[in-house]
Image 1 (cartoon, rainbow, N blue to C red):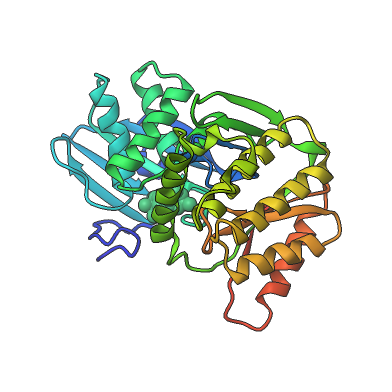
Image 2 (image 1 turned 120 degrees about the vertical axis):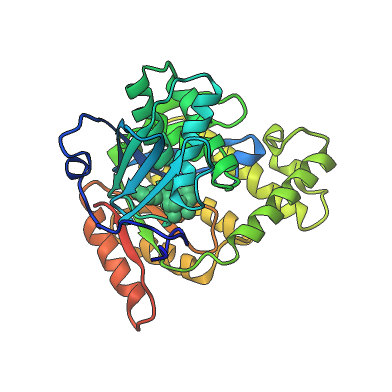
Length: 370
Ligand code: ADP
Ligand code: MG
């Protein structure tokens, strides 16, 4: 029967089989990796810029044991779907590609990978913008590292995970998701410099709570607009005579550019400056203002918002105890994030979702706090 998520025939649809049931007494190793939500620094990664993601408490678990057949046998309890492919053949399209990429890229580095049985489970929503794909790659690489004893530091692991997503799953992605999944935790923000790959864990201002709401809006325009914005940023950098927009720190420098390059560059330069200010240890209130400014910049200059994301963030800003809110991820649908006083997130988030969904036809959902 074709699997709706992978588009491929699947032999086994025992949805929800646990790792213990899957391995049936056979020994296996297990590794976890979280998803991420980006607090500040959007559309900056491909401009060699800065970002501030936090790991989610939700995570993906990958369990790996030996296989006595010359195949890789994969099972996702999340999808209720299994895929088997021979060691010497490519994996079919779908979730197996992310895992295959991790295996092949380790083999390329001369890791001795045996025939494997792999079980995947997750409490992350798939495709909602919390980066379940990076969590899948990072958890797979962690489990492979443990099983084989292959030496790999967490930063290199993130870079291999990113390559797996680009080269095997065919998704052009920056490095933020995999770096966050591999190096962040849910108590800190992870400062990432996309050029130097320097990272630093920083406290979330005032121990604030994070709200994430999935707008439920389809991200139909996301792919084409993403490529268009990337091209515009490259053109703006070229016109300004710099390698990447990260090299421009004074926002006034972009004013001479023709539209729409002026607006695009103004977003990137101002967004990088917001991240750098946020890293200096600002109050939760100031951090909230920076998030609001980020949203307005993404809406007006980068033009990647939609009315529903504007509405959700406006509802969040009106809520008691919320410091600021913005769209998170590439835009055109996906999720919004807000920072709020500790303890108010669950009620504020639920109230905003209820107000937004009033009238029907809308399917926003609270993802954080859990
Ligand atoms: P996001 O990373 O924002 O959740 P993506 O579209 O990048 O969204 O990644 C989702 C894809 O990653 C899924 O369609 C699936 O192919 C794969 N994936 C992630 N987590 C799992 C899982 N637990 N089981 C199977 N596939 C998964
Ligand atoms: Mg992803």
